[in-house]
Length: 234
Image (spheres, helix red, strand yellow):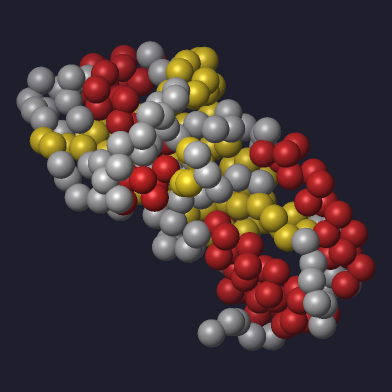
């Protein structure tokens, strides 16, 4: 069992973020548990890389003095697995919004999809989704998007090390991606749809690794609470 001093000096916690939770909620859950266990008025807790509410998987959460090292953890490569659907797009590039356009898929073959995936390996310019937490003039992009306000979004340089199609059952595709920080998997899938003269949107996403840290060794946040203080938050 870790002590109060351990958490204040700094701990790296591997947390498996549940579906529907924001990364902020996961951090708050951990902070609440530590404060309650040790009767602390405050303690610094932060995460090293956001996950969308519709994504699950590994969050690296730093406590105490280790929060100063968050940037180092953010710079580590990240692995994701997930699924997407060909033949349709959504404004958010995932299931947060409903389908806005449909596209043909009859021309697609397994080989064409495999070859297209190879074209995304390496350094490239990527346009972030308008439904994202990036700030523009002090407001999150998703705020503008939900208000139907058009804003100019600048492309960002990203690095994709591996993009593997692990299951092809057109129109349903399973995949694995290894990428550098700042990569939006939703944008990757949207761009992939364009590359094969169709459309695509993300239907599930799970972050499985950050550097050498694996989600297989991560805590569910409510299980972490139960282990630390004997009960989960209501």
